[in-house]
Image (tube, rainbow, N blue to C red):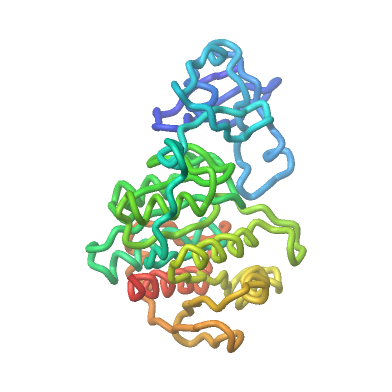
Length: 331
């Protein structure tokens, strides 16, 4: 049962709920299950909390039995996201503009840069450094891909970056849904729409919060960076990989240049730009490594997140800041 509701957000609602005799925190995706009120009976998914996941400090409302069964849906929508699950819902994708008559050929090459992140935590420092380097004269947007959280409204960082004009837009691609500026069936369509129709000068692609991982070489959400980089290259974008680096991660495989990034670099079918902070060394000779000085103190004073996975990690943020400067230089 819902005990209390937090301040209304455009896409998500924070709740206090009672499960058995326990008071717990929960979130509700307003677009899927509607807004809740105290006293509502809800079905919640408690799996993330029970497993103790780092990104799972709350339960997820699956259905509101009191008032969430009569949603009107999206008029004229017929393309499904989360299809063939109990949360499938229809959207109006950006690709609909190509469905009148014969499909039009895409405008290629796009000729604008696209950065690819492997972790959502890299987005804020990259966007901050990009704005610092461009003086706010260039429009940077975010394409949310698979690999982490799928709801587009789940990231408070995206909301903050949009409010501060560090992000000009937000599209969700693939199974990710609820982008503030539109839905896309594919990352390719999202990039094409953003760089030709929305007027972004550059794009950053990557997962929402809470990356998936298994500790294996290929079984982690960071590998979606490989798909996004190949997509960007195929569309004629100058592709930039934002390396995952760490100076404080307790896991040896992630210290220095993470094995996530090393795997992507090794599997890429073509060379890309890789930005690293001053003092770090390139990992191979195949890719275009570029070194940049970074302003960690300036970023820390911005009020944006300065902790990665609950810990201080200067190298993690330095690498993303270097990438923001590189992306600005490529724009």
